[in-house]
Image (cartoon, rainbow, N blue to C red; front, side, top):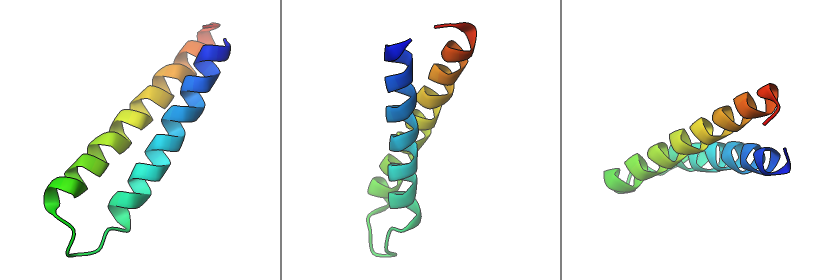
Amino acid sequence: MKICSIMFTVGWAAALAFGWMALAAPQTEPEAQLVLHMALSALGAGLGLWAWMRIRRGC
């Protein structure tokens, strides 16, 4: 249960951090870096959602 809780926290923190970086990026930032931030944000959200589902089932 503790591992799932840590994965939940880290996943959603990554989603928020990288999502903010993607949204607040200046217009001059390379598009590849923007895509990387969006992909890492989606990966973090997926990890957070997966961990939440595991916690609901009892991990």
